Image (cartoon, rainbow over all chains, first blue to last red; front, side, top):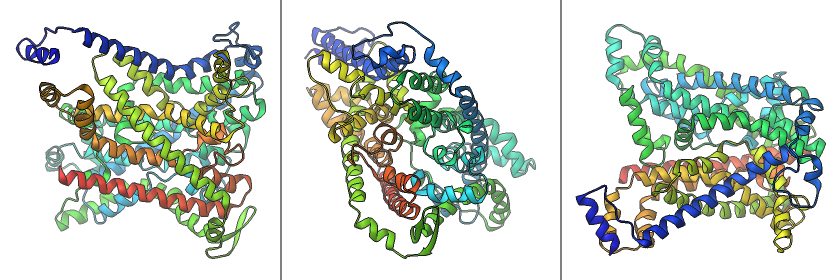
Length: 292
Length: 321
């Protein structure tokens, strides 16, 4: 009854709202639920930070501490002093950067071809490429391992880079975006005598800035976090990326969670900062590509 | 540029991303023009097809060949036909891993869907600080699987983990997260939900924003309760999002590796072993690589079935409405 009244009032004077006690109770309940959910989602991250800055006595003690008994950088000294955390960080930056440049470039080119060029077998090639999008690395790993061994690049960055750059997900996003560019625009350029390459460079590419942003952010995130393939492709601890370094540290330190969490915190910080700065692109891109 | 970006935003607001097959329409081209642009297309596609050909399609075919060969530690030697697949059928650990994969998927997928929809409805309503809450729920999506799994190890450590400490303080007794199969399984499910709920919420939020508010107004005038509105309006109207998520979640759960590999390594015993971890174990721990390739082919076939189901579903949905 009260709801029906507000609804009718709403049609006459949209901005005036009468809040009934039931509505107030419901909005308080919603807020409480949201706060609880927010706390649950944040607790693991809070705990990672807490342990990263706690002395190791806190971690192994059977008592309950909800914050560090004293703030310490001891764990960070361990990962940078005893372990090559800085090298691993640098390796992750280099590998991620090369893969991103490589894969985004080739996927933009291919996306344009699938969106705007006519050629024989287009439908078939497109389906073939996309059917590989969901194939997990565990299907390919044995053969890929032999391939990089045969090519003589096993254990180097290239062994991580090439198989990782061979990814089809960017093609799908690029095609979907470029297909929305009006054909008239491209036709007009063609009338002026521009060739396919020129049209791509002068007209398509400048319009693709939002697409490129999404592709770069998602690829950086995906490659920075990638674990299963680098685990197979790398063998020398000096060449590890951060995820493999984390596993190595866990193997060496077992239950010394302080050092492990310090490195975990270091490893997630760049991506979290990127996410907070470009949330809209991330969310759009994730929703449209369906990958994580 | 502006028309272009608004088209993008509109389509993100209207439900799940269209599938590749759904958006694909072959354009008939004149023969002469087609021939001319085949050359250009080869130039544009070339770099990608070379990369995919060498590092994706070649290993895929090679994996199939390896699965018909005999393992000898490092390389493979000699054809054995279907021997590896015969072993697979008779291998109790393979079946245990397949069963665990199925159970894990059957538990995590409905929970991800339900939590995702619930949170999407909540975050779509009038709520102070809505943006902040959304960000908090999205955040786990971008954190690496290995960092998440290590957080899981930290939280669920049987003797020093905070979860058991809190349970002990609350007088509830501790849970053997690492030494007992069912508890270990539960800890993996909890971590997976933490990772996964944000993605489900994103897709459902997009679906909800495509529903006209007038429908709810009409339902309210008819005297429908909130629950009735949810059950008979929201749930059917986000059906396309549910379908998209169902397939994506199944594929995700089916392939979950990092979390299990780091948190339990498939243990205790074989209680959390799944197909992808069992394949890795055979390929790179016990070095029975041909057998690992055979398991990989099984994983590939199952993945392909789900991908095909999604394409068909999207296509029929598009032609119907």
